[in-house]
Length: 198
Image (cartoon, rainbow, N blue to C red; front, side):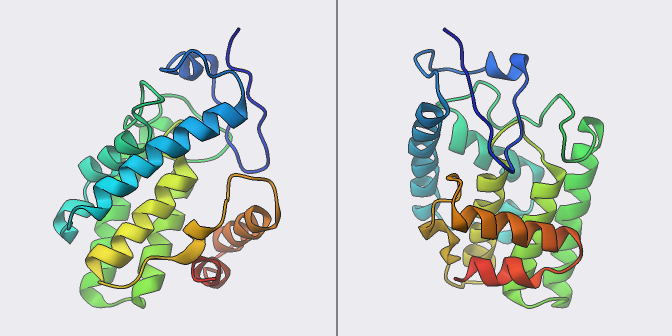
Protein backbone atom coordinates (compact mmCIF):
# COMPACT_ATOMS: atom_id res chain seq x y z
CA UNK A 1 0.00 0.00 0.00
CA UNK A 2 1.54 3.30 -1.09
CA UNK A 3 1.30 6.84 0.13
CA UNK A 4 -2.11 8.24 -0.83
CA UNK A 5 -2.18 11.96 -0.08
CA UNK A 6 -5.09 14.32 -0.29
CA UNK A 7 -4.01 17.87 -1.05
CA UNK A 8 -5.83 20.86 0.31
CA UNK A 9 -5.66 24.47 -0.78
CA UNK A 10 -2.11 25.82 -0.84
CA UNK A 11 -0.41 22.42 -0.75
CA UNK A 12 1.89 21.39 -3.59
CA UNK A 13 1.51 17.79 -4.81
CA UNK A 14 4.49 15.47 -4.64
CA UNK A 15 5.44 13.52 -7.72
CA UNK A 16 5.93 9.75 -7.56
CA UNK A 17 9.74 9.99 -7.35
CA UNK A 18 9.44 12.35 -4.38
CA UNK A 19 6.97 10.00 -2.67
CA UNK A 20 9.59 7.25 -3.05
CA UNK A 21 11.76 9.28 -0.67
CA UNK A 22 9.46 8.53 2.27
CA UNK A 23 11.56 6.93 5.02
CA UNK A 24 8.64 5.54 7.06
CA UNK A 25 6.86 2.91 4.97
CA UNK A 26 3.96 2.54 7.42
CA UNK A 27 2.73 6.07 6.61
CA UNK A 28 -0.19 5.85 4.17
CA UNK A 29 -2.35 8.94 4.84
CA UNK A 30 -1.97 12.72 5.03
CA UNK A 31 -2.84 12.68 8.77
CA UNK A 32 -0.07 10.18 9.51
CA UNK A 33 2.40 12.13 7.40
CA UNK A 34 1.48 15.40 9.15
CA UNK A 35 1.97 13.74 12.55
CA UNK A 36 5.44 12.37 11.77
CA UNK A 37 6.52 15.62 10.11
CA UNK A 38 5.36 17.61 13.14
CA UNK A 39 7.43 15.41 15.48
CA UNK A 40 10.49 16.01 13.29
CA UNK A 41 9.80 19.77 13.18
CA UNK A 42 9.64 19.85 16.98
CA UNK A 43 13.13 18.33 17.07
CA UNK A 44 14.33 21.09 14.74
CA UNK A 45 12.70 23.74 16.96
CA UNK A 46 14.51 22.25 19.97
CA UNK A 47 17.81 22.41 18.04
CA UNK A 48 17.13 26.11 17.34
CA UNK A 49 16.19 26.88 20.97
CA UNK A 50 19.50 25.49 22.23
CA UNK A 51 21.64 27.68 19.98
CA UNK A 52 22.45 31.25 19.15
CA UNK A 53 22.90 31.90 15.47
CA UNK A 54 24.70 34.83 13.92
CA UNK A 55 23.35 36.63 10.91
CA UNK A 56 26.35 35.46 8.87
CA UNK A 57 25.30 31.86 9.55
CA UNK A 58 21.56 32.31 8.99
CA UNK A 59 21.80 34.16 5.67
CA UNK A 60 23.50 31.35 3.78
CA UNK A 61 22.26 28.69 1.38
CA UNK A 62 23.86 26.12 3.69
CA UNK A 63 21.69 27.24 6.63
CA UNK A 64 18.51 27.33 4.50
CA UNK A 65 19.15 23.70 3.52
CA UNK A 66 20.27 22.59 6.98
CA UNK A 67 17.12 23.92 8.60
CA UNK A 68 14.94 22.01 6.13
CA UNK A 69 17.04 18.89 6.67
CA UNK A 70 16.57 19.11 10.42
CA UNK A 71 12.83 19.67 9.99
CA UNK A 72 12.23 16.66 7.73
CA UNK A 73 15.19 14.23 7.71
CA UNK A 74 13.40 11.61 9.82
CA UNK A 75 10.59 11.50 7.24
CA UNK A 76 12.02 12.32 3.79
CA UNK A 77 15.22 11.08 2.14
CA UNK A 78 15.47 14.33 0.15
CA UNK A 79 15.15 16.64 3.18
CA UNK A 80 17.48 19.62 2.84
CA UNK A 81 17.87 19.22 -0.93
CA UNK A 82 16.45 21.74 -3.39
CA UNK A 83 13.65 20.23 -5.46
CA UNK A 84 14.55 18.63 -8.77
CA UNK A 85 11.14 19.00 -10.40
CA UNK A 86 9.02 21.96 -11.39
CA UNK A 87 5.79 22.57 -9.48
CA UNK A 88 2.56 24.45 -9.99
CA UNK A 89 4.13 27.30 -7.97
CA UNK A 90 7.66 28.57 -7.43
CA UNK A 91 10.53 29.36 -9.74
CA UNK A 92 11.96 26.94 -12.29
CA UNK A 93 14.03 24.23 -10.56
CA UNK A 94 17.17 25.50 -12.32
CA UNK A 95 16.65 29.00 -10.89
CA UNK A 96 16.37 28.03 -7.20
CA UNK A 97 20.04 28.54 -6.30
CA UNK A 98 20.21 31.90 -8.07
CA UNK A 99 16.97 33.14 -6.51
CA UNK A 100 18.09 32.08 -3.03
CA UNK A 101 21.42 33.89 -3.48
CA UNK A 102 19.54 37.04 -4.56
CA UNK A 103 17.20 36.79 -1.57
CA UNK A 104 20.06 36.33 0.91
CA UNK A 105 21.92 39.31 -0.58
CA UNK A 106 18.75 41.44 -0.56
CA UNK A 107 18.06 40.56 3.06
CA UNK A 108 21.61 41.55 4.08
CA UNK A 109 21.11 44.86 2.26
CA UNK A 110 17.76 45.47 4.01
CA UNK A 111 19.37 44.83 7.40
CA UNK A 112 22.46 46.95 6.75
CA UNK A 113 20.44 49.87 5.38
CA UNK A 114 17.42 49.55 7.68
CA UNK A 115 15.31 49.50 4.51
CA UNK A 116 12.27 48.20 6.41
CA UNK A 117 11.31 47.73 10.08
CA UNK A 118 12.65 44.52 11.65
CA UNK A 119 9.36 42.58 11.46
CA UNK A 120 8.92 43.55 7.83
CA UNK A 121 12.40 42.32 6.89
CA UNK A 122 11.67 38.91 8.42
CA UNK A 123 8.24 38.72 6.77
CA UNK A 124 9.54 39.85 3.38
CA UNK A 125 12.19 37.14 3.63
CA UNK A 126 9.51 34.59 4.51
CA UNK A 127 7.34 35.63 1.58
CA UNK A 128 10.18 35.56 -0.95
CA UNK A 129 11.53 32.18 0.12
CA UNK A 130 8.10 30.52 0.06
CA UNK A 131 7.53 32.06 -3.40
CA UNK A 132 10.79 30.50 -4.62
CA UNK A 133 9.48 27.17 -3.28
CA UNK A 134 12.92 25.62 -2.78
CA UNK A 135 11.87 22.19 -1.57
CA UNK A 136 9.51 19.43 -2.64
CA UNK A 137 7.53 19.68 0.60
CA UNK A 138 7.34 21.82 3.73
CA UNK A 139 8.04 25.22 2.18
CA UNK A 140 5.43 27.11 4.23
CA UNK A 141 6.56 25.69 7.54
CA UNK A 142 10.23 26.16 6.59
CA UNK A 143 9.66 29.79 5.57
CA UNK A 144 7.84 30.61 8.82
CA UNK A 145 10.62 29.08 10.89
CA UNK A 146 13.24 31.02 8.90
CA UNK A 147 11.33 34.24 9.67
CA UNK A 148 11.25 33.35 13.37
CA UNK A 149 15.00 32.68 13.38
CA UNK A 150 15.66 36.03 11.68
CA UNK A 151 13.43 38.03 14.04
CA UNK A 152 14.87 36.35 17.14
CA UNK A 153 18.54 35.84 16.28
CA UNK A 154 19.22 38.80 13.99
CA UNK A 155 16.98 41.41 15.65
CA UNK A 156 16.62 40.04 19.20
CA UNK A 157 12.83 40.34 19.14
CA UNK A 158 10.11 37.87 20.23
CA UNK A 159 9.19 35.23 17.68
CA UNK A 160 5.98 35.55 15.71
CA UNK A 161 2.78 34.17 17.19
CA UNK A 162 1.55 32.34 14.07
CA UNK A 163 3.18 29.16 15.44
CA UNK A 164 0.41 28.99 18.06
CA UNK A 165 -2.12 28.23 15.30
CA UNK A 166 -2.35 25.06 13.25
CA UNK A 167 -1.84 26.23 9.67
CA UNK A 168 -1.91 22.72 8.17
CA UNK A 169 -5.64 22.22 8.85
CA UNK A 170 -8.19 23.61 6.41
CA UNK A 171 -9.90 26.08 8.73
CA UNK A 172 -10.02 29.84 9.31
CA UNK A 173 -6.36 30.40 10.35
CA UNK A 174 -5.12 28.63 7.20
CA UNK A 175 -7.55 30.56 5.01
CA UNK A 176 -6.39 33.85 6.60
CA UNK A 177 -2.77 32.83 6.07
CA UNK A 178 -3.28 31.90 2.40
CA UNK A 179 -5.19 35.14 1.80
CA UNK A 180 -2.37 37.14 3.40
CA UNK A 181 0.11 35.35 1.11
CA UNK A 182 -2.00 36.29 -1.93
CA UNK A 183 -2.01 39.90 -0.77
CA UNK A 184 1.79 39.77 -0.42
CA UNK A 185 2.03 38.28 -3.92
CA UNK A 186 0.13 41.35 -5.13
CA UNK A 187 2.56 43.69 -3.35
CA UNK A 188 0.76 44.28 -0.04
CA UNK A 189 2.88 42.77 2.75
CA UNK A 190 0.83 44.30 5.61
CA UNK A 191 -1.78 41.50 6.01
CA UNK A 192 1.01 38.91 6.31
CA UNK A 193 2.82 41.05 8.87
CA UNK A 194 -0.40 41.45 10.84
CA UNK A 195 -1.13 37.71 10.66
CA UNK A 196 2.37 36.92 11.99
CA UNK A 197 1.70 38.85 15.22
CA UNK A 198 -1.96 37.88 15.84
